[in-house]
Length: 256
Length: 238
Image 1 (cartoon, chains in turn orange, blue):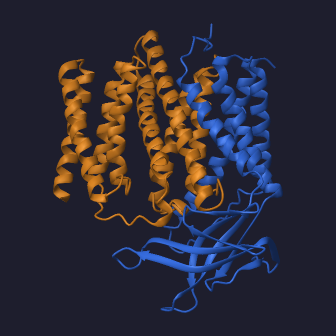
Image 2 (image 1 turned 60 degrees about the vertical axis):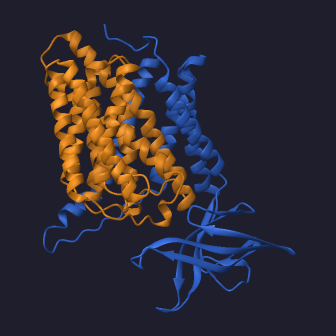
Image 3 (image 1 turned 180 degrees about the vertical axis):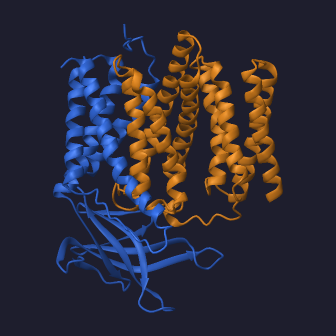
């Protein structure tokens, strides 16, 4: 089973990267076909993990990353069809490829011992909202970097700026919901909405930085600083998602 | 101060709040990083529950209230209003607990008796106005024999001559007379013996409903605000 998962992860990651490359080269048909293929592999992985767990695959960083990869395509579909931003495809595919590559190097867990605290109706919406939000935030960060290093025309810059704003605007309510559903859950299980756990603190800092970005974008004089908050926001997001666990400082979130 | 100027002021204020929290939250990470140095031990304890946090969030609430008044009311801005008012309500709910709330941990023996006076950590007895006791306790383990799969206590709640039964478990609290009871853990008096008592958190939170209403306002407000199509109101620098 382990080798099957590894192969699926590798194939999915490579296909996402090739899809991103075709999007960059403006070869639409192969880009979308490969995007669909990569997504199918990705969804198969999520399905296998789900069956293995007997529950939603949020057991470990490996499963979370494979789930986030799928969220990139779902977020892209919204950006394409609702926000009419089809040009964002390459950024989403690139991010999905990076997330899948990360998943490839992680160990695949065998059994999930879901402790009583995690057996709550709030668990799935809490994690799901964060996954959707993080996928959009990651893509907005990549666009922000592109915007800062590109020397294209001013009109192109305004398109990129609008793209960043649209993504954060879509990401922010999910981030808010993820954080506050967590607060309601914490009140049900630990008796307080907020326990100033290190992971909670960094989640709040991340939320605040993205809120500042949204305010900056809407203010003419402050707009030039908005990129700073996208970069800081994403750095805080990485600390929240990976950094805290890497340092072994999960606190009350030690099982996440 | 006009609307644009006030927005810049709130950007600066929020940036300062983010900077303060980031600096304080970075200290434990730094301590963890430095712990790789042989012989170096630093375990900083940062308290976020004191007056300092209250002052910061009081200022944050005032900014939210000003934000609401600087925007002219239109139905299209309902999301904006819900979000900012919700933030104030959530903080107010938590402040009500900070001022008037109470909570303590106590061990309840699993002996079928009810207790109306519960001893808190400092030795003081609290009269709950009702009796509470544990009759039975069930614990289910995973195949490794160590990790808990589920545990719950059959509780008795007495009030006058009435005796009610309810289940206390993780994610399943009991509410009575303004107190909320949480099952936190279970204990054994000696290794290998039967589970003889449960650790219960007793909490009286007058701001709980205000905080929950605030959360509902914030979540719905952020979705409405961010999913409402904009009408080119974003400022553009000339």
